[in-house]
Length: 293
View 1 (cartoon, rainbow, N blue to C red):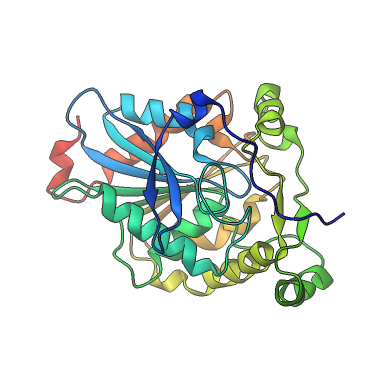
View 2 (view 1 turned 135 degrees about the vertical axis):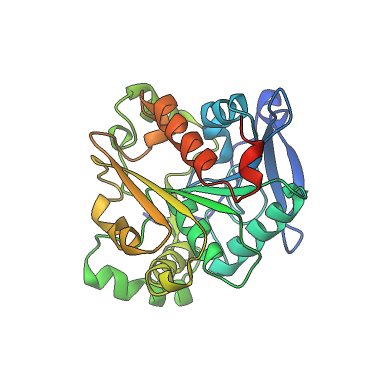
């Protein structure tokens, strides 16, 4: 049943201490997190999370990347987590892209390579950002990018109608905990997390469908070296939907056999992060490659 779009449960003191707030492109407050390396970083990474979740779910990934010498940042996209905005709603997809542009500008350091890493809907945000006319990152990492959705035709046709007539109506996202990871604790924590919202507004759903088409049609505008990682056992975003990226020059696509949707949160997650780090080191723009340990 549709329900009003509400605000998240008030966070605990520990949650509010896990980051800070920065303004988005239009002044919307965005909750940001930072994992700093022990020494001088050889690149900066900005993480963009997926639909209904928040950047706090990337604690292990952020820590592992920082331990590898990367300066890692993440933020809760508008309408998600501890950021401002109507819950799981976006006025237009470009609001997400403008927020990414503002966060990239905030973390960019002269002479240091900049990496944009997105998961699921966050990967689609990262991809459409990199294919736009905005200042591009040096490298792109896409985890389970949804370039299409396996939904009935009537649902796709109805999405723009509902977006116009009832843009803030809430619909549940069809997701089960065991689709995320082989580790049952991941799914349990997902549904127990007060900042996770396994639902979306009709406007966000319609904008997501439009962005998938945009991502597919704009692939010829992708000129950033890109790594695609996709779990071979992903039933939320089947591997077939990221196949168009495999034929794009400068893109390396890796299907990770047996892993589910959140490859970074699988028991093998540390090994997946290690693969990402190795790829980043090998693809740093020259002469900056000498900065990598």
